[in-house]
Length: 169
Image (cartoon, rainbow, N blue to C red; front, side, top):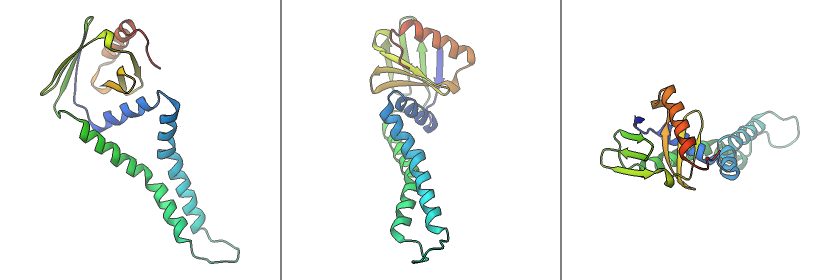
């Protein structure tokens, strides 16, 4: 089976999120940074700008407003850092072709070629967007599903289940 694709930032982001789901702490950090902090920041802003019927200054406090804005902007910063990492780690910008067969995996890119035997794949993981083939706990080969037909996805899943001894979930 052969899959040809060009990795985009969306593919990279989906692979990083799936990788973070492998253990609780990185996934929790992802959720806190992308969801909890902005919600907390919005709540602080609403609290600061809601008229109060108590004595004191009617003006919002500058420090709490700045902290709230910082919390709201954290996902923007995280996206910027992820895009920066994506741009720095790409080795080629062209199409990549991966051949899956009974002997192993062959990958070809614009300036690269590599072969990986099935014994080198420690585990695999998948979600609705991507397959991750793990060579080491933090080193993986992403295969975006958007370039695969439904039949190729089923075939690849069966091949991985048969060839990889300990699939990670």
